[in-house]
Length: 320
Length: 320
Image 1 (cartoon, rainbow over the protein chains, first blue to last red):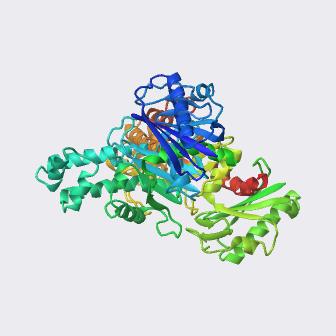
Image 2: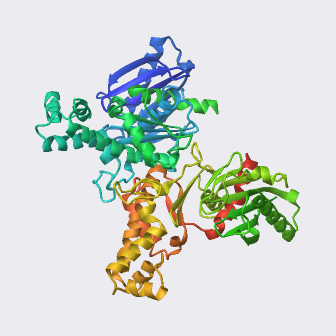
Image 3: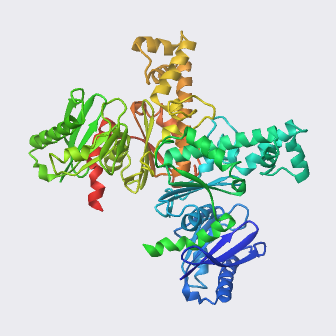
């Protein structure tokens, strides 16, 4: 049996075929710009599935399921896209439309949850009964996997760990609240913190790094720190403090076997990010000395996590 | 079938017999002071069980199970007390000792978790697939019930919601961290906030209330506020803000069907506490306008929650 996952992104539609173990067998990618209504979305997804089947010599009947990861709000029971942030898909009954062309079961899920499930089946979360992913990107995304299942909450909106208040009366957040963790620990926040330090210290090594890069990136402060820049080091230290606060909160609540951090920032060298993060967490978390404590690791699947997780959305359903 | 629960408290041992629905049939209470080692604890628990059987005309063989709620750390698999805060019980293999006298299955659980389970079976959490209790006492205790089971985390230390950091660089907490929610939202914190306001405003109505009561209590500010005291009202408003922050965090993460607040403070009149709390939460929580949103309620079972929950520790095990 083969599984197909499709990742609906802001720029690309990416489809991949994976085996039972979550290994990618084949991948297809296309621009999403040409897809601008519900019917053409369903048609395009099916065309991608058929392309993958053709390329790998697979009959459509050999597919166990097709899973779709989508940014925004989805209705997993009905198989619909409710809302997407930067795409023109609203209230799309995707499963119904897809089944006009194919009888392969179709599942749909929020893309951050797909990434968490992918890491659970085939990456950093393998074998963890309780597993949490924290993705450091534009915001701070979270995925909670408990007993092999995505935790959704009663209304499908659970797992919004980026919107924990960590600072009362803190930075305003577009969610309507203030002091949300993602205003301190996202890649966007890190860039903002880096930019502020650059403006305050225009003759620092950090400033040189940024001028050479031509822009402020999530790496600027780490690069400067490695070059011995005190200003850059300070930005890194404070950012890791911010990151630790929310991770400690999650561990105090969940005490998961594994917590994986993903997103661009997490690719930083371990001695610059993961190791100091672990130190800060161990010093402050409840059960810091317990023999069973949460293993904080980097996510393993990178950009493929969402695709692999989407593909395996149907897997648990078969096992049960 | 009958169930017996025993609540080990700092002052009293309380034992109760309940039916399948969590209704209390009979209760026995005794001072715990005379019980000062492991063997006498096991013996006393068994004597209480036999007393309850005698009083209700029940054969010991008719008991489905005995459940014990204990403050501190327990090892639920082995049925042992690892550590208690204010009691002399450490590393007590309670199940093994109890089974030298009786073959009734014995379960053991942290007392806050028992209270959450009691509310789930017989109180505010009935019918909630996802249910959270927040108990406002010396600290802020939490209980997470998911699919009818207590959430423990990988090492049994999960659910420490009182130790979420809500203020970076905030008040120090005995847990070793700073800015923990319980330093702002516990009954202890409310008393501290009330005391500070009293000292700053020695001629306020609040000051008169405290002088008449002879002490600062968790009710002082609420009583003063009801009498039109601006100082008291300010204490209440700020306290409810603090309470709301952590509850919003929990809802953003869990989106449970129901979240119940318990402990002495929760007995305050709804228009003084529960209603303004709900308003603040609705204004800031993710999915505040979602048709399915978390119902924030008061716990219903009061001091019996722990006893009833302890009694029903074995119930789920029978159903499965």
